[in-house]
Amino acid sequence: MKTSTFIAGLAVGSVAAAVTVLYSTPQSGSDMRSTVATASADLKAKLKDVKGRVDELKDSVTDFANENVPSTIEGVKDSLGGWRTADPGSRNRLENEIQEIQNAIEELERSVAAQHSH
View 1 (tube, rainbow, N blue to C red):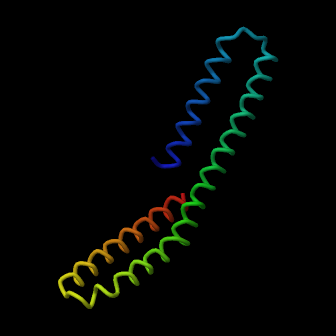
View 2 (spheres, rainbow, N blue to C red; view 1 turned 135 degrees about the vertical axis):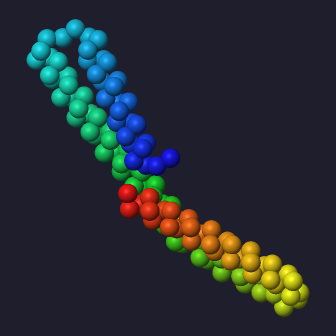
View 3 (cartoon, rainbow, N blue to C red; view 1 turned 120 degrees about the vertical axis):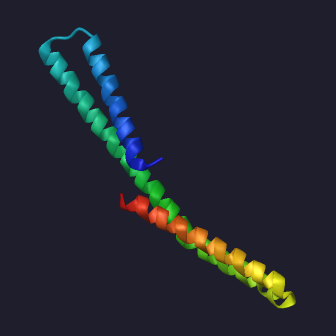
C-alpha cells in the first residue's frame, strides 16, 4: 500500500467521522464553530504524527538496507568462494544466484528510494 493512499484514506475517514459527529449532536452556531476548529486542529496534529511515523519507518528501512545488506552479500560471497573452484557447474549456478540476489536487493533499494521521494 502506498503511503499517500494510506494517508488520504485516513484523512477522508477522519473527516467523515468528524462531520457525522458534528451534525448528529445539537449545538449552537458558536459551539459548532468551536468544535469544528478543535476537530480540525486535532486532525492536523494526527496527520502530522502519522506522516512523521511513516518517514521514520522509511528511514529505518533505508538504514537497514544500507547497513546490513552489503555486508551480508560480502559474507555470502566469501563463504561461497571455496565452492567456486570445486565444481564449474556449481560455480555458474552460484554466480547466477548471487546475481539474482543482488538484482533483488537493487530493486528493493530503488523501491525504497522511490517511496522515500514521495
